[in-house]
Length: 284
Image (cartoon, rainbow, N blue to C red):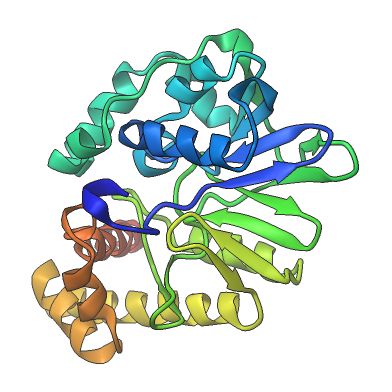
């Protein structure tokens, strides 16, 4: 609940022979997370696996703190994230450069000892007892992003955009160095698996029917608007304002969700523009 924003960050527990925590939220939410775990009758000593979709601060900034508090746990994450969670200086500096004051709101991560980290390659299977988690690398949102597959369901992190339940719509969310081809490829990989539910980190679960088709369509609309804006020398603010006019509810999400989302949509415009600019330079 950063700044009191209820439901903004959702974490999940899978209770089997092994107990798995999916996502942790930022370090600033550790007390809320621990209280929630204990409230449902699970002790921190009982947790075996701590599994982020990726290591952006709002998803796993509290990972090191929680691993430390759960003495029998190991963290399971993308190979490209392993070094960053053990040697946090570059991770923290990059986060502060990109997020500014929001990084300070989320709080600084703690390093995780390398012997408490498992690297999950594409297709890696984590056996939980009667069930399993399988990794699907989905680098559209971040190169270290994993969508975790669980019995016809998926913990999607940010690979399927940001979902707003009040609108029943997802909008793109991109990094500064964005690759549109990887974003679409990640969505197509998920589409092929025909999930029943998508478990978002922001604002909770969503029925999967039609959801991935909707966000893929949204990505394509956004990139077309950004390409047109680039050809007409529009600023990113101008492009964002066009999106506000053309995409129902988008402006309301920009205004409603406080400091930690104040620049989210503008950041996605800038990421897409970065892709368009690079692609144009390569074609010359």
